[in-house]
Amino acid sequence: MATWIDVGQLDDIPKQGARVVSTRSGNIAIFRTKQDDIFAIRDECPHKKGPLSQGIVHDKKVTCPLHNWNINLETGQAIAPDEGSTPCFKSRVIDGIISILL
Image (cartoon, rainbow, N blue to C red; front, side):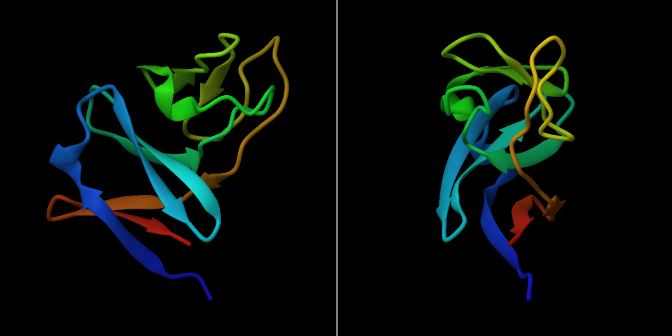
């Protein structure tokens, strides 16, 4: 059964930044966009498993630091011409607390 897990405060993540949370499902990167949207995806690029949390956040995408693949934070899908995806996790912010569904 899936459960909401609190993973930190919204203010702990800078705008256009990320933090990593270690879970039983592996490392999950929590991203905050310039508009304060929060996204949670596995911290692995589908290409060579690069740490997406170390990439550059722009709009609702992150660029992998290893080979510049762009990943859509809403879907986990690589942006064409690249192919592949990384798992996404539902996230929410309530009273400044970020939670993810595991």
